[in-house]
Image 1 (cartoon, one colour):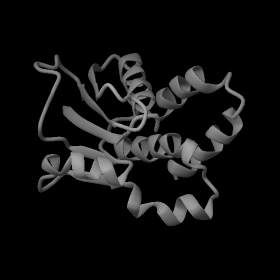
Image 2: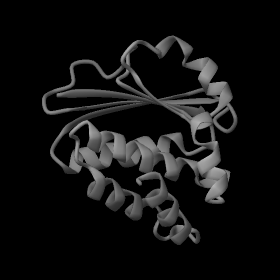
Image 3: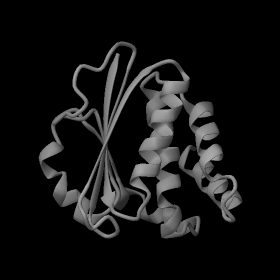
Image 4: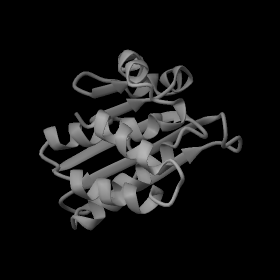
Length: 160
């Protein structure tokens, strides 16, 4: 089993937090994981990408050009990753979730946690059962922040 995930957004959206949480959860499950952050000097506002591979065997090379799952969290990042789309890729695009985000009054500062919930569900649909581990890693990373209860609520909405 080898699953390649590319998360794309703008700097400051929490792309690297998402990738870190997923990587920690996979590692905690004794899976092999590779995580390569990719962002420019203009960390806030510039393009931010995270390349993640989860496998039951060694990961030979950490970067890839053909993801199995592509998460797109902004219009700008959609342009940046246009070349990564291919037949068979599972695309999780923010534009397809705008009504849900609005209906649940999810703040843009919590979009990353919402999409972490969505991605957790997609991973489980691909037989990678990391739900408890992802939530534990998320809690470890964010529970001391003042908006932890809101983040918990948003994660669970995404994971429905």
